[in-house]
Each structure stands twice: as structure tokens, then as C-alpha cells.
Image (cartoon, rainbow over all chains, first blue to last red; front, side):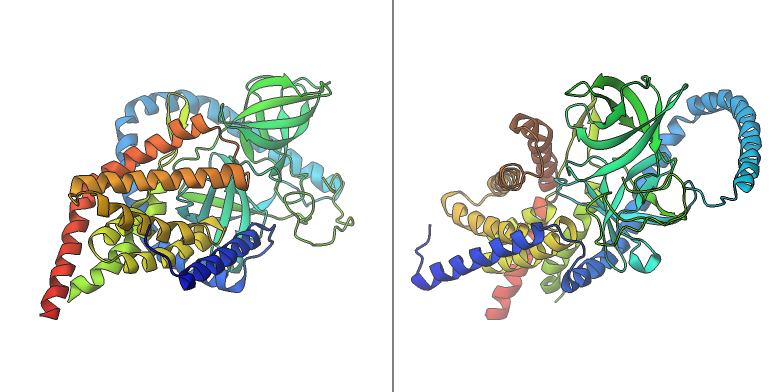
Length: 304
Length: 176
């Protein structure tokens, strides 16, 4: 190594102290980005979204070619499903109108299901991929708030973890963060079981659904959707399908592995679900220091 | 004249392109996910450090490392340290190695692999963000990343060298 003078050693030591302080500051459980951070995030985000446009165009081109090659097979398959679809559509319509009438009877127009979608484009993915994060081009000025659900057309992908005025960071479901929980329910044929998605299995690449009542029967292939009971997510966003059911460590509750329905590798257009029913900040995620009010007027709603 | 601005301009473009390429990753193959981590910018900075000016390269490393930390990682001080450190290391090791393009390419990729290893130790042993086992990390992240970055550098390394040589020649002409 080159010869170091005393002055240099002192400089290096001071530098080290500053760096350690900065790292530990940024590792703290922060709720908001500081002002200079917000400034950097917004300006880099602006440049990034300009670059993202041609890049997205090129990826789309590749995907178009790929789908063109599969057109025949896909057409065949879709034709088969089309017949089922007409019947399903009719059923959905009757159920919808029935639901509306019943809701009127109950005097309860607000549903946990209702949400207002905010459309956003993915401008970047955290390039070193140690934490599973993406950055989108909508921020607090567009109404995005921390902890909101983010999804694609095929299912839930994650939730908003940090917001600046013009960008937002989304933590994907594939995360090791132990605080990342999603309240979910399993829709099996006989009953509905509630559970919490906590973490994921790195070896199987599947999500883990824990705390399911062991008296309820759930099967492989059952669909898992968000329950809306966490306070922030709307109800009924598809998460995935159960691939295996086992018993948890102490045998008191069941545990299931879920194969997510959304594709996480090529994310481009996403939707942020802004729930119409009153939002409760609380145990879901790290909390946002807001007080937990109970008089929301929604039956079945409450803390996690 | 334009060559003067090309050196930082290329760095900015590579900085912005990295996350775009990261969108392709992870790639599923045989039911396993493989992560390809693009390290375009630091490879370019290592080239700058070897062929152009180590101090300039370290300064770029500091600035872009800070931007990288704030915008993508949210841990300020990680890449801010690693980028300049890699530039210094490159400059120190190149004294013992022949400066042919092949050797610098291999050296740069090895340095990036070292950086990846340091990052793994940081995320796994120090702050416990991941519980990825070392063998998993080695097979699913390190090897694919080394491959991807090697291909990238084999395609663009000569262009970087061409650009840097042009700039060095221009500087010499200005001096004389």
C-alpha cells in the first residue's frame, strides 16, 4: 500500500466515523425521507423516468415478438375459455346486482372492496437486488401514501414503503423484512380461512401464509386474496394459489405455501390501490404514528 | 471538445441504465431464480481509474455512490465508500499487472466480484437483511453476475478504452 502520512490517517478515521454514523442513521426505522434525500430522489427519478421510456419500449418490443410467436396456441386456449367466460359474466352480473340490493338493505354502501386505482410506471428496480424494491413514478403529490397496496393486473406485488413528492418505493412481496405482513384469506370451496402472509421461503420461491385456524379445511390450489382487515389494503386482491399445506411449529395453526400469481421479473405498469373505505394506520407495517381510532363505522373493521 | 464531456456523460448514462437492466432480473430457469446484478458504472469507473486518472475516478465514484445510496439503497454510506475504494484498489493492483485490455477486463470483473462479496457480508452478517446461505449466494448471484458483467465488459471495454485514450491524447495536445 502507498505510504500514509499522519494527516491522511486522521482524515480516513474521521471519514470512517462519519460513514458509520450515516449508515446507522439510515438503518434506523425511518418513516420519511429527509429533505435532501427527497430532493435527490425526485431529481434522479425525473432523469430515470426519461430513460425508462425508451427502455420500456424496447422491452415491449421483445415481449410483442414473443407473444406473436405464441399466438396460435394462445388463441386455441382462449377460445376454449371464452365459452366459460360468457356464463361466468352472467353469473357475476346477477351477483353484483344482488350484492347492491343487499347492501342497500343493510344501509352500508361502503365496502372494503372498493378502491381507486392510481396507475404508475415502474422507472427502476433497485439494481443490486439485495432488497426487493422497485421505484415508481407517482408520489405523494398524486395521492400515494405509505403502506398502500401495489398490484399488477395479475395480482398483488407489494406495498409502498417510502414516498417522496414525485416518486415512491415499493417493497415487493419477496422480502425478508419481518415486519412485512399482509392480512389474507383463503377462498376454499367450503369455507373462508384467514391468515397472515409472513415472509417467504427462499428455497422454494414461495410466500408463507401463517396462523390459519387448524379446524378449517384448506386445499392445494385454493386461491388466496387480501382480506382488507389489515386496515390499508382493499379486500379481494388476488395474491396467489396454495401449493402446499403443513402444520406450524407447535401444531396449533396451519401454515401454507403460496405461489404468487403476479410475475415479478418484468414489472412495468402497476396500480396502486387507494382504498375508498376509511384507512386505519396501525399494526400493518411499521405504523405511521397516527392514532388508532375505532369509530370508523365499518363493521368487522378494526386493528389487526 | 465534445470528448471532454463524454467521460462524465457516459458515467451518467451507465448510472441510469443499470436499474433498467435490473428489471430483467431475476431470471427463472429450472424452477430456480438467478440474479444478475448489473455493475456497469463501477466497471467503467475502474477503467477510468486504470487508464485515465485515479483521483478523478474516485471523485466520480463518491458522487455516484452517494446518488446510488440515496436513490436505490436507502443506506447512505455503503456504495459511497465502496465505489471510490474499488477505484483505489484498481489503481493499486494495476501496477503489478500488464495493462493489456484482456488483463484489465479480468481484473475489473474480479474487483466487482470482491465488491459483491463485501456486500454479501454486509447484508448477511452485519445488518441481517438477508438469510441467504453462502452457497446459494455463490451459485445464484455471484456466478451469474460475474458472467453478465464479463459479457458486458467484453462488448464495451474497448469502447471505454478508445474514449479514454482519445481524452488522454487530447490532454497531451493541449499541454504541448
